[in-house]
Amino acid sequence: MTMLLNCIFARMNFETIEAVKELLSQPQKIVIVPHKNPDGDAIGSTLALWHFLENRGQESVIIVPNDFPKFLKWMPGCDSILNFERENTQAKAKIEEASIIFTLDFNHLGRVGQMQSYLEEASASFVMIDHHQAPSDYAKIMYSDVNMSSTCEMVYNFIESVAGVEHITSAMASCLYTGIMTDTGSFKFRSTTGRTHRVVADLIDKGAENTQIHHKVFDTNTPQRLRLLGCALKNMVIREEYRTAYITLSQDELDEHNFQKGDTEGFVNYGLTLEGIIFAVIFIENKEEGIIKISLRSIGDFSVNEFARSHFNGGGHNNAAGGRSELSLEETASHFESLLENYHEQLKP
Ligand SMILES: [Mn+2]
Figure (tube, rainbow, N blue to C red):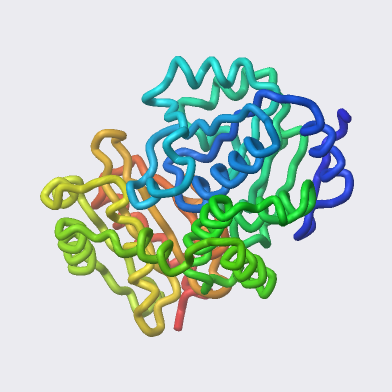
């Protein structure tokens, strides 16, 4: 099995399924890796896969490149996740001795930060499960589909194909539900299909406590975060002539509101709740890394993936992408303003 196996279908294709079954027919040492700054889909998909592999008697461990938000730390199994920054020696040893490395919710080894060189040197076979655009070809087995709502929906398909959905426990169902919910903006983004809803329905039947999960993920405001949101909304600049709204947050403003990791999650989406706005962006200053972190969202055909790739060293999906800038916050915002004119045709009302 040396050929590169591609899958561009919603479900996994036959060769990919057979290749995975063959790999898992032997006892393996498995490492599962999500992208840096893991979100609900990254943590949900890696945990669900980890439960599945553990239940099949495979020795497996999740290694996150860095920490993940507190609102995900209730998820079943998350206490056994290794953090590459915190448990560095142990994590490196696991990567070195791994026979299989699953990479989930990303498709380029540059997305794992400090872990990159260790993954590149690993002797393990790579299996990719991911729904982002333009996968690079480090994986022996690729299950890549940009039409999927989430990596969690893909892990559901993966388990269905490899073993059958009866192997999905209530713990796994909760993990998968969380990732689909967060990556689809609570089942409303364009990537949400009838199939997505059927998967989610089945996950509820299998024990995902949907009401509880929404509550645990979304109702976690602190007074500081709500006031930071107030600050972000006050800073919002609205350019109706380009159907665009953007927010800036400086390091000083973050510090003033006792910023905790994850606090700005979802802020970018407020721009899109304005009538007529189809393009929303947030620029967040990070003095420690010396960069401006950028999140971009759109409604409809305007591709923020293309925009982020062309101008801000990033990418993602058509309607949700990320990027970065090495200019100052003010310079980044004015550079962004100057770019809008180039997109006048697509953005004009
Ligand atoms: Mn995802």
